[in-house]
Image (cartoon, rainbow, N blue to C red; front, top):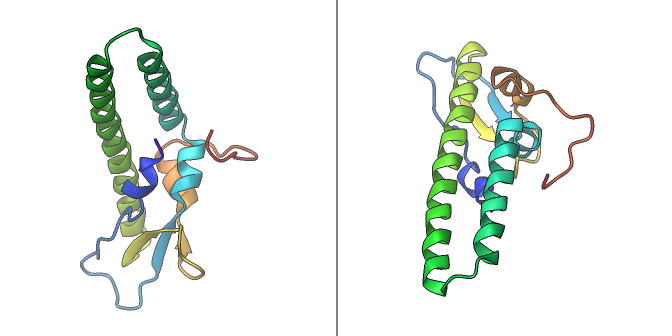
Length: 135
């Protein structure tokens, strides 16, 4: 269920009208955000629990497949909702800081202005002392 990385790979790529041509590029560490975001963690735990429940049921394969498909649809809706919240927050920060473009930190070697902390503040996320991947 790590689909969020694919969906959020390119969080925000909107060029803002009126920005100077020398405006820096903002970077957002999506993995840090989702590892620290209680709302995301709650949804992920709920969906994993539902997935385990489906797997352990004593039902026909067809019923399990339908339930799994419904769960995938639900996961997509949740992921889309959370992705939109991140994009909205990143867009607001980009506008405030006059950034021309915002990209995800993943795959970027160097450069750019890291706005992850500002996005976390906008989403009311408190950073964990030592975030653990996959939790």
